[in-house]
Every structure is written in structure tokens, then in C-alpha cells.
Length: 128
Image (cartoon, rainbow, N blue to C red; front, side, top):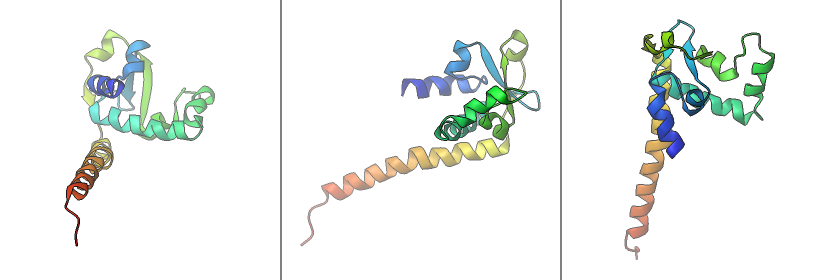
């Protein structure tokens, strides 16, 4: 949970915990710093890169631009951080915004709702 909340705190700056530690930043192909929704969607896309036995990450070694699968899907680049990027415009695509709301619904709201329903059904008196 600490990692999740820390990442969310940095997402609006085009960074996550790793990017802060390694002094990098995520830029979109249009030159903007990746905004919160874009970083959120990129983080979920990175799970697919990881679940494929890490192939999505390993391909960055052979890619001429050093991009991972999730960077290609989200149209982003990881760059060495500099003062120039700190003041650059931040933006997210409409698709990234949609993915934020979908994942929030599926992975946060739905489990909470299911837990509430389970708790209510467990506390209900037995029917005769």
C-alpha cells in the first residue's frame, strides 16, 4: 500500500518511485510530461509486460529506442530527468483517462462492493 500511494503521489509529475530513485521522467510522444491518468494507465500496462515472463521489459534491451511494451502501447519515453522537464506541460490522453476509471471501478470499487455484499449476507439471519 505504501508503494501504491507513493506512486500515485508522483504520477502527476510523470514519475513513479523508480523514476524518482533513478532520476528519470516519463514523456509522451507529443513532448508533454505524462500526466496522472497516463501514468496510471502505463502502470497497469506494465503489469502485462511483467506477466509475460518479463518479456515486455526485456525487449527494451533490443529496441533501438530502449522502449518497453508498455511504453510503446502508451506512446511514452523514459528520459533522464532535467530542469527542462519539470516545468513542461503535463497531459494525459482521453484513452488513458478512460482506463483510469475502468481500472478504478474493476480493481477498487468492485472488490469493496463484493466485500460489503458478503458481509451483509453473512450477518443476515438464517431463512427457515
